[in-house]
Length: 230
Image 1: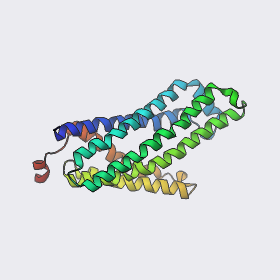
Image 2 (image 1 turned 45 degrees about the vertical axis):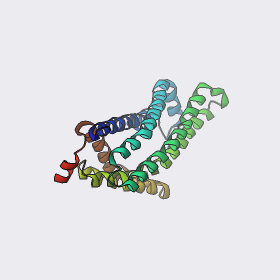
Image 3 (image 1 turned 180 degrees about the vertical axis):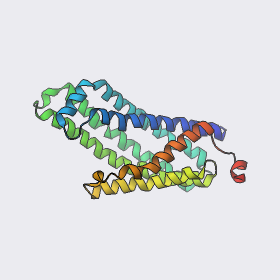
Image 4 (image 1 turned 180 degrees about the horizontal axis):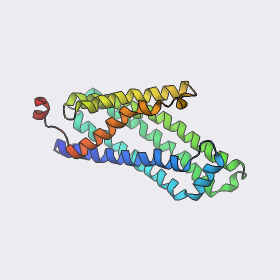
């Protein structure tokens, strides 16, 4: 059987792929190319930097492919702690993957609009492009429900296992509620994004996920004897 530390480092490597490709696809590319208040500027940016936009789509595919494997490896590592919570972790994480992959069709639609501008008039085309990007963001909101929910059983397993620092488990569980608060606020209160609190509320999930990723990859996990001793 594969040793716990080998399994942990495999999980850490997959998590690192998810983190890096996710940051590139979900943060860097949109912040570089999309001007949400200006359809024409967004269209011009996409035409000028189409290659970057394509890399963003490809990074998204890599991210979701790695996220398909990550919970399965984590299940192997943590299922002995509580099988019910481990199954819930896997089920909630995997539910997000088809949603996320299908949601990329909106970005592919943007590529179609850019490459075949004859479908719309010059004035309507930028608006259609921005509309597809808005649709994509709506899909992200749906997938984010499960990106948040899986952190609760995952964090519980990390906390109870003793194989990783308990603080990481606390951050992960708090991150779940951070996701839910942001999703609920954004859906029920139109001015929620202007409050400027979403970034603060998202901080525990960022600390928990990046911290867990690096700990698994660099330090591995404590053995059963070490966990009991601690």
